[in-house]
Image (cartoon, rainbow, N blue to C red; front, side, top):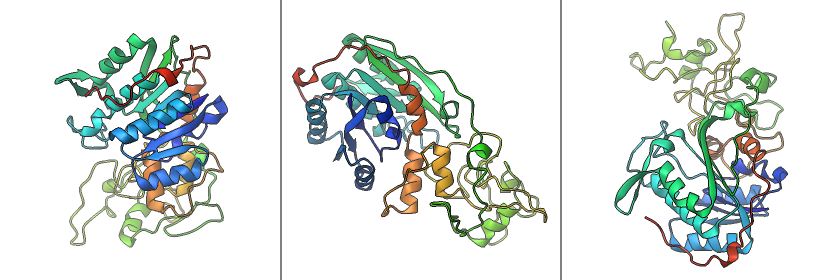
Length: 364
């Protein structure tokens, strides 16, 4: 079965798709560096770079998907307008990107569709013909009449072989058959996932590829050395985050914070290289002098593992550490997709999507 991926980022979500008999042969991504990254990691796919809201790009992707008889669609539209990690702007134009996904589905009519987004999508409205409608109702209204069964829920990647808590809204959509959600699996802890990797301090390197520590400033290192596992440096009595004039730095309880060993990791965000952002500091180990080891953010290797990427996954050589950290933070943990595909219906009716007619006509 051939497939198409919209808003593909660098293709992290697609890591395990081939084992389910699906070849992503067409993909679309807006940003140049991400599209280049995607091409190097998925050389057999036609990556069409550009803005899907542009008529020419939309039609180009659609024509390619029709020509290659794509019967599977993966869509992960940007979520910053609906995300609690973003600004949660109700009128963010990115909230309307779902309309282009639905237009694409109506014109292609693939057998199976997987849409992924933040949980906020279930409460978000989209404007349609001058009226506001919940995105959930919009999807149902537009697709049920075409014979699609729509099943949606909020899931946690930690329930699906990923040592990271990341809640996502998932729409499982299939022609003529309901696509059920898979059973949850046993959670994997941070200790089980990365506990065997060697300890590293700021700017130290190991013999393991991508397991090298980012360099931090001396003040951050001092604060973190005195921060216990699972705690924030903001709660330290003496070595707390402070400005150069001595004033205490204020912040959320998730900042300057070490993650815990005995739970899945918190959500890995785009800012995973900053100790002052959310839950980014290594758990550390208590030392004989009363301080804690690994006063640093997670290494790239640790992030790869906690995201559920295979041991042989690697980014292009030209990609900077910052870019790699960003695309991991934006990406969909691939073992979630892997598990969801295990329950995909096998006997949906095929559609000859080459003869459907019509190209881009936005419903908005």
